[in-house]
Length: 77
Image (cartoon, rainbow, N blue to C red):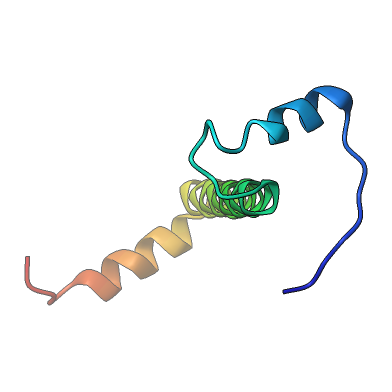
């Protein structure tokens, strides 16, 4: 596993020092989990924005709506 050196605020360091209270074996495992959660949150936000953009484009494009309807014809319900 790679190591990294970084700075945190005093309150963040105090929070990390309570790693056992939150069920972690050490500060590093707590921080890794926090990074993974943040990464997933960022990915979900990116997906939300993409979905909103596609929705906006679809709602404004009558040709695209017609193409979609044509593609759906003949598909089982």
